[in-house]
Image (cartoon, rainbow, N blue to C red; front, side):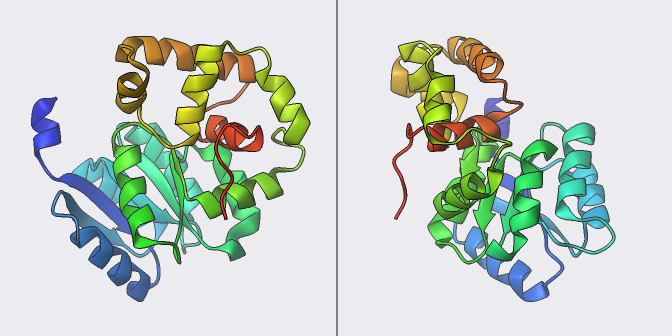
Length: 225
């Protein structure tokens, strides 16, 4: 395992716009610990690259020909579960962002966002965390309507959590990995995993991203801008 972390963090990048790919690649290249091992212009090609290279992260545009990012993420999660799928979004993707929550995506990053967010997001999901660009998180909350709890109802749902579970959930919402949560709360990583299993069950959420959205909605994560 230490060997894996000594090597560059391998990323596959998929977007049907060559200029977007070039821009994202340039941002990632600024971090010597990240290596883009493959680029694709559609979802099917992205899945094949992920199967070939087994990267830690796949950055996927939501809207792509032949196979969109949502379908590609679902296939990657099924075929190469060790690869974290992150959706590259724009605010024009509102209808798809909400759907993406159920497709196993480990994060949402805004194409026009701060480059530091892109780097932070890639590193967070590579370490097992969930990452939501803060502006995207707010937008998903606005879009989620009846699918995810809002406001007071969200806080009611969290009422059944212990104080320690709330602490863990808040750090999930902040994008921290299990290892980072363990260090922050002075726990062993196995205990964090046990807390997460309990949290997911109590809140009836399917994955870290849904849990993170609920943490935002309930006010556990400070609001953005």
